[in-house]
Length: 157
Image: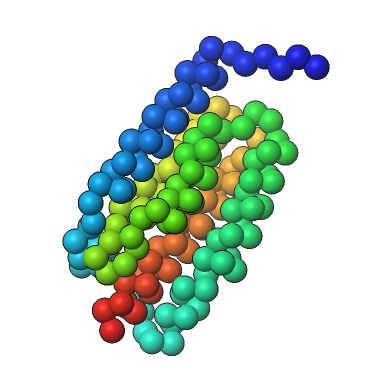
């Protein structure tokens, strides 16, 4: 079986790689300097909420991201921008998400990449499974937001 890759696909993948590299350098460039004060709190975390908020990442986000990978790989054609979203799921291992870190930058980047996934799925008329992956990326971003608020709030206690 011969696999053919078009020029358009190569150009899009190179552009996605450039966006990922540029955003990673922005995330790693410097600390956010009191990111918690700049983050719009949609809720005020309490002491009882801190532990469930932090446990969202391993027990909600990780299974959801793995399900998204399976969903995206099964259907064809795939959205290109989902690669950007998946790339930023690994950014948490490299940046400082703390009271003084870049948590707000990571949330903004993940929100923008989630929205671009949904826009690409709608623009290219991709299968509904890809739209489910786009909505799931918004859910993952929301869980990261809650966890980041809880981490920052627990650091300031």
